Every structure is written in C-alpha cells, then in structure tokens.
Image 1 (cartoon, rainbow, N blue to C red):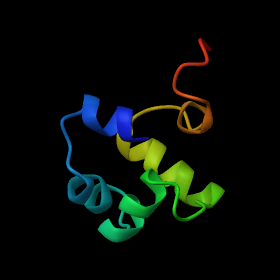
Image 2 (image 1 turned 135 degrees about the horizontal axis):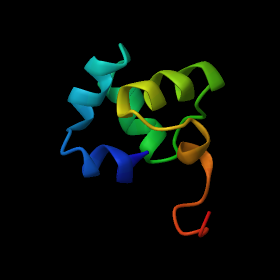
Image 3 (image 1 turned 45 degrees about the vertical axis):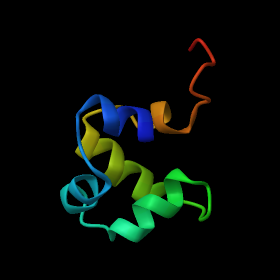
Image 4 (image 1 turned 60 degrees about the horizontal axis):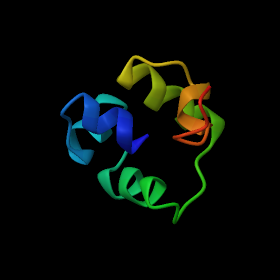
Length: 63
C-alpha cells in the first residue's frame, strides 16, 4: 500500500481523505500495527486506482 501511495506522490493524509478513512488508521495499516478489513482494502485500492489484490501481495513477489 505504501509503495502505491508513494508512487502517486500522496501523503498518508491525502490517501485517507481519498478513501474516507482516518489518517492514523492508514498509518497503522502501513506499519502493520492494525489489520485491515477487506472492505477497506477495496476502498484503498479504488482510491489508488489499483486492483485490490496488488495491495495484499508481498512487494517483491514477482507477480
């Protein structure tokens, strides 16, 4: 998620605004402090304009 956000040049606050989530939630999810629901994965994926599965695969898995 962080990689996709940074690619767009967005702050955590901007991503949170785009998907109507709290910035502290976005931060905690990026740091693996909180688990993210499937519904929120979909919201984040839509905001980042990516498929939801790309947010849950390991960053260097080659998929």
